[in-house]
Length: 531
Image (cartoon, rainbow, N blue to C red):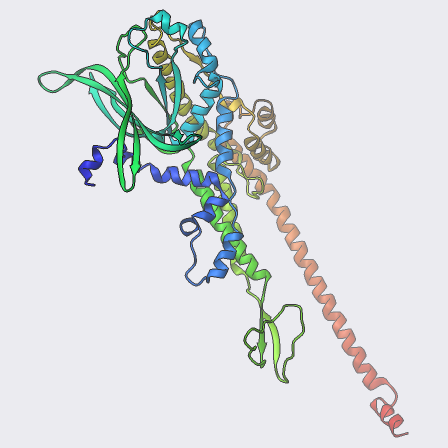
């Protein structure tokens, strides 16, 4: 298949799309965890150059992944929705009633919003499609209502939008074509079913003037195609197609798709919101794998035999059993010094501190952030979450407008959503723990600590520089005490050494006294033996 042929297929993936696949793959693999790390061991836990296969397989079995990414993702969503998002009073009642079952599958709008936000953070962006059942030709609005035909929302991951086109009309970027890829089940035999690739294609005609400049938009058409495989050949079958119209037959003015960005890089392009955390999570898994392997080698020393005959074929040496060693031979254990263990451990602690700064929660981290660092992390996190929350708010209000297009009786009225952007007021266990630790170390004043415990955030008048200076002052106060203790320890050690020396001298003098002071000394023994 030539490149031109590929671009004429609905499953064609734009270069901008393929550039996003690697971050998606890393985040997904980190979410799956240990099983995926071992499954893709050649990529994530590669075999060392001097490592034999048995040692490599043993290392893989000792490798486990901590899932900081998923926990942080859930925590971020919880922060944003700790104060419920609500519909404003300007949302029409008939539209609000539909939101009780927003997708036609029983999902409440509150749950749908959280699912959309989670998907947008996880994959970088998510799409909300407003769909409407196909209205048979000749059916009027009353008949459509009697058949309970209604608009509903469908949520798609950013991974679903594989190709798209845009145009600029009056300086505004407009989506004019998009293909959504999905996997659907179709009947297979009398009782079975099989998954197939399905593509929803939306196109909107662009009206241009005689200079080729886009000045307006025409009808929105749609196609649903399924990929069929027969041997090595692939074909695409059109399942349904038509023009998007409201129940009165009026064409829709736009493609009814809204985009929520968790971390936007461009139109329909993004990066997962916690991509850096996923990479650090992966680094921790790799380093822990090395750490476990090194610890195992240090805990199981290698026996060494000198002068012993080579074992016969099939003969093995069992630890804990005695063996024969010829005269002049020797046996001992060869044990690694393990100099790199402490450095590896420190590197692990550094990575876990970095995970904390990137929004993760680490229970066994021995390093803690200062109050200044915690405040900076909180502000950076909240700023990014506010951008993502505003994007979702815009996308949801746009989806309500698209739903209203299918409800002519509303005359375009759809309403808005009320959202709280005060995420810091939510109780964040990790942030609170860091602030308590900063207070214990003298880096955070009592009044600010009490404020954190009450409201879950630092007070507005909190000055990180002032607290940092307090921390330095407290450290300078405690340092002489530590030095005095060290001097006391040195004096004690010197005293113990002097005592040991005196004891040794006394024992030596006693030995000399016995040898020289005993009447007859050694001669007494000799006389006894002669007698």
